[in-house]
Amino acid sequence: MQTTVFLFHPHFEESRVNHTLADALDEPVTVRNLYQLYPDFKIDVPTEQKVLAQTDRIVLQFPMYWYSTPALLKQWEDDVLTYGWAYGTNGNALHGKELLIAVSPGADNYGKDQFARYTITKLLRPLQATSRLIGTNYLKPFVTIGASMISDDALAQQAQRYATYGVDF
Ligand SMILES: Cc1cc2nc3c(=O)[nH]c(=O)nc-3n(C[C@H](O)[C@H](O)[C@H](O)COP(=O)(O)O)c2cc1C
Image (tube, rainbow, N blue to C red):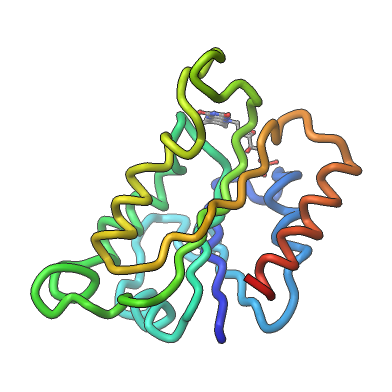
């Protein structure tokens, strides 16, 4: 069972939370740092499709940006999830694989009665709908809420949970 983490962080060298989470992962989980691979946003589509095809569990890891994803993840979706490959006629390359969203919202004010108004579950709906379109099994998202002010202890625990999730889920 191969798990690949597709990590999207535009300033990974300055990252505390996503860096700690990614560092907690170990073999046989593979981490691909997409901003490092494609700083110019020119994604090698055949390579990315090959990696996806060989993966059983696809993890999309990113900090929440503007209630959504960093721009390169959107570009990756646009370029890599092509018609006839990921969806549409004969587009079944990803059918039956698992998809896990691992997102870190900096704030902790999500929910109907709170400032952001919407839950993280609702804000992730475009990714959930995409999962349905491409035929992947959408796993319960791994959310590191309040990432901007998370304590060292809580972050260490979260990283441990992530490592276990990555291996056992
Ligand atoms: C451009 C930008 C947009 C952001 N948008 C959001 C947002 O919409 N909601 C939120 O909770 N945090 C937002 N944040 C905060 C980041 O999600 C947070 O700093 C990050 O998850 C912390 O992880 P890191 O230590 O790996 O960078 C934003 C940060 C930046 C730089």
